[in-house]
Length: 119
Image 1 (spheres, one colour):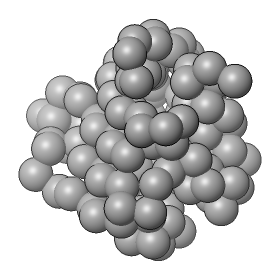
Image 2 (cartoon, rainbow, N blue to C red):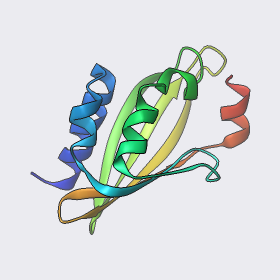
Image 3 (cartoon, rainbow, N blue to C red):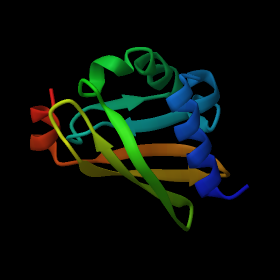
């Protein structure tokens, strides 16, 4: 399985609310950098716990409308097309860095002013 397939499987698990399946593809000491780059979660357990409150960190009505993966050496970038109640259409990028076929870092890149305005 290539790295882009692992990332795609994760997006599908997240969409289905299967968070235990999602985090199985992350190393124990992984890092998650949230939109704005100031908030960082360390460790798979903290990441998994945050997923239980995902509705609180996404804008109301958040929906992924398109998704594609770009694979490089030990990394994948997801280009995510999305909308919400206050944003009719936008895009964000998520960088996934891998070690031995497992994700060790996930970092979101987004227009933070637009993201804040979506709430």
